[in-house]
Image (cartoon, rainbow, N blue to C red; front, side, top):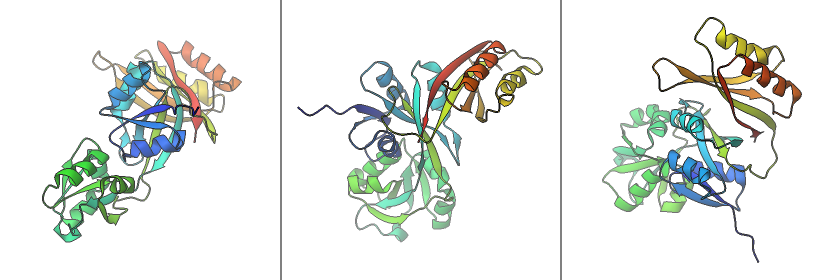
Length: 273
């Protein structure tokens, strides 16, 4: 009897970049489960309806995905893997719509921002949609006049659209970091990382004492950002450290940092593809 494939959730429709990241992390044999929102991905993993999830956490051009960071803080769902996906946007249109006839382009706001220069040069109006693949499906099914979509080449194949131009993003250095949630992907990793969320006293040197726990042990803090708490002007600090908790230096540094914090939570210690 064939083994039932694991079900892995992502936000959007088939053909979304989240599905590409899912395949990059978990391979082709899993079942991709589309969800309408990022929250639905987290809830599906937390409630056991799927065997994992994949969400974007940071764009090299647009910065952190604030909603994902907030959901990581809200849910007790471990981070178990990471992959950086090269995002290569395409301008997609129904058969018969020529490039010089395109007046508007549907896509996710971040994708539109990544292609803003291209759209200005072409005189194409950006039209926000909730997801790149949803934009592609809407253009294919509803055929709004003089309207194309900005999405992946996979979306073009899925929804019967033509690629008018490929690589329409303004920068070739366009990557998005995606995180695996829930059970770890079964694959090899190039390095390890530990993600933490912490709060500190509001006073001189409070954050410095936390960071020095890592720097004094030769550990690189690769990301540091703050997210607001429910009380005004109080923040949660989120940071990534190179190395796994299995490394004694990382364990010692986390313990030392915890002593300098009000609260400290390990969001995950995981592999990076």
